[in-house]
Amino acid sequence: MFQKIPGGSPVLGYLAAGILIGPYGLSIIRHVHGTKAIAEFGVVFLLFNIGLELSVERLSSMKKYVFGLGTAQVMVTAVTAGIVYNYVFGLAGPAAIVIGNGLALSSTAVVLQVLQERGESTSRHGRATFSVLLFQDLAVVVLLILIPLISPNSSKGGIGVQAIAEALGVAAVKAIVAISVIIAGGRLLLRPIYKQIAENQNADIFSANTLLVILGTSLLTARAGLSMALGAFLAGLLLAETEFSLQVESDIAPYRGLLLGLFFMTVGMSIDPKLLLLNFPVIIGSLALLICGKTILVALVGRLFGISIISAIRTGLLLAPGGEFAFVAFGEAVNQAIMSPQLSSLLFLVVGISMALTPWLAAGGQLIASRFELHDVRSLLPVESETDDLQDHIIICGFGRVGQIIAQLLSERLIPFVALDVRSDRVAIGRALGLPVYFGDAGSKEVLHKIGAERACAAAITLDSPGANYRTVWALNKNFPNVKTFVRAHDVDHGINLEKAGATAVVPETLEPSLQLAAAVLAQAKLPTSEIAATINEFRSRHLSELTELCEASGSSLGYGFSRVMSKPRSSSSDSSDESQLPDGTLGM
Image 1: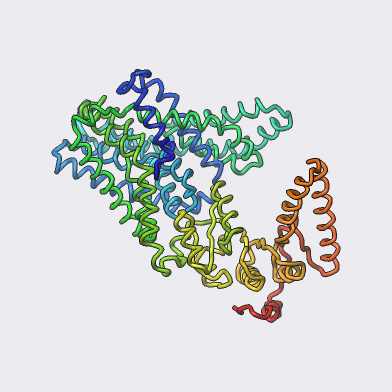
Image 2: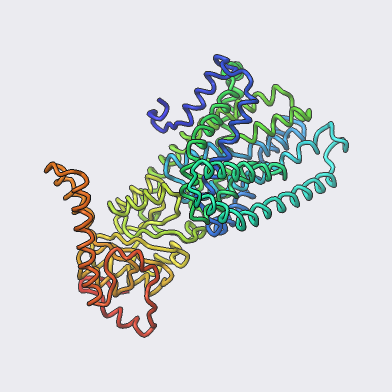
């Protein structure tokens, strides 16, 4: 029901279900605390899944935004909110510190789920948001250490600078040791263990071992004072380097979906509709202040780190709501007599409602982008600061029908990519979907440099004209030889020319569509499915063998070319001759 609402999301359905069956609704579930203990594993499995779809190298390229943008966002938001609650609302210093830091945090679970549902995880604002959320998972440790030390019940009788420094120092050492043990142990043990289990061909033991890895690393980081989700993320990151990551992801999918849904329901159980009605003006005012204030602050900080104004605003809207760690922080503050239970109940309500608004805030960000970003072609041009955090990404040259399908597949796998096209209407379509699509000529060295071609691992070239495809392959091979180029060929002669220009693999564009169409016709002719498959496979094999013979005669390797992953070295003396080989009707460099 909620998914059919414009801008809606299944997250909203889970939240509404939680309100309905929780202690403030039908009271089917009265003791939320026990349910939360299980539901927290939903966030653990979500972060493990995110880790599986990343790599250590890709995470390393994000360090500027994880530790730079993340630190700035948390500090600026915490200080601003703390000052407002201290001087405007007259709260005591310790309470203002806890509230400021608690509201600076955002919901990792809700935001990442919304980004995945909308296919925006690899977009500019999606990458920036994920970087900040990673830092927030580290920052919450500092907050939970700080709360007992600033409590009136503290042995120091207040804020002791030395006690805080000692506690943070011990926590930092424990965190470094735990993370180092996980990374070192994971790299040494995970692949051999999984290889041994895979050889036994026992699916149950394989799944059980995955659960052991997730829960074991989560427990280790929890014992070190870090969040359980961070340990699971590290485990996923390490397993992503192995050949078993796809099977592991498939095994944990049911657990992740069910437990994450349960987590969202427990958030809904914390929302008291009666309290909302009794304090409606205060809660709505606080909610507006939280969302507007955080959006503005995050957008300003994002601009300082080179993010475009539209992407910065979209990042701000996603990070504006409160997060699940605020419930933990405010609950601990009540236990330490820093704030009253009444104040914490109101804050719980504000944070819970703000989390429920996340899908609509994401939709609002997309609406802003479609209204303001797409009217000016200059805003569609690539900017170096928009792609400087990318590493080992894919370049899609051409955002037509084929390019859009490739982009969709890469988005679903959370593989970073950048797309280029010279038609502004296609770029506008991609931008409206929150994808990193830019207006530019893929055959231009300057444009390729602005999208980080020197750090890219591969390029899929799907331009409409054979000449444009040839020029793009030549430009990439000449200026960025580290990039493997995969290109579609109009015909055999065109494919051989592309091979000579430096293409890593050439795919005949007519073969597979023709075979699929032939299969449909044969099915209509009442041929058995097995016979259709045999016929199609036989034709494909015969066609590719003929291509192989032709290519051996011409000195190329035309075909699907997946086995030829390394392009032949070329001497610098061949550059001038390559340039002279540009076909008629194409532009030179």
